[in-house]
Amino acid sequence: PPPSAGHWPGQQNWCWNWMKHKGCKEVIAKLNWQDAQQRTAGFHMAPPVATAPMQPVQNPTLCDRYDLGATVLPAPGEAEVAKQWLASQVAVYVVNLPAESERRTFMSARLAELGITFQFIPGVDLRVQGAYAKAKMAGAIPMDFDFQKANQNGGGVAGMVGCAAAHLGAMKRIAEGGQQQPLALVLEDDVRLEDDFAI
Image (cartoon, rainbow, N blue to C red; front, side, top):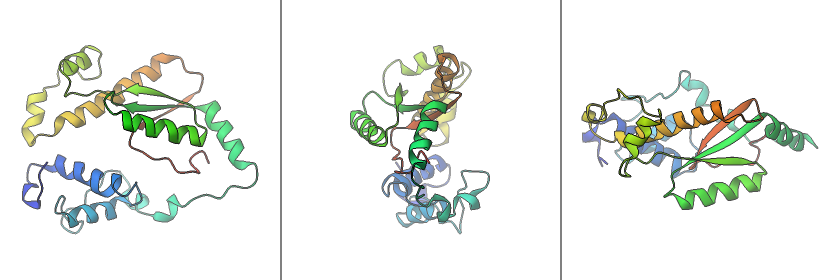
């Protein structure tokens, strides 16, 4: 990956990649988007917020409020009711690459600790020979998608396409799977749910 700010032109995908790594994973998702970008900019891996704000959502100012992510202290019995509702209303899935056994172990332990039942959905690792063709045949990547053309904007597309394909595959599985719950939640294997997640 590009190590410096000099790689920004045509390399926007790397800025997002580094922002996710430096601003989210390394600090265990404790920063809002703006502060994550500033932290990443401090490593010269993304532009400073004042230069080019990277806004991943429609209403970024809402997501920048730390008070909206504050820990909830439930009333007696409220946590158990919330866990029961979650189990009865939401099927939980975790996208995981088969090679990422450490992440699989972490997610299994954390969700068990929270009392959340879930299923793993295999991710799409485009580094594996034949995975791209297999994902196209399965409908997770549109047949008319041109990987080489998409990769001309500076590379790094394989990870994003693999991630998108995994989520499309997850949606297909949910739609066709006949789960009992009316809702579904798809998590990536690098998230850490807070203790009050069910609430």
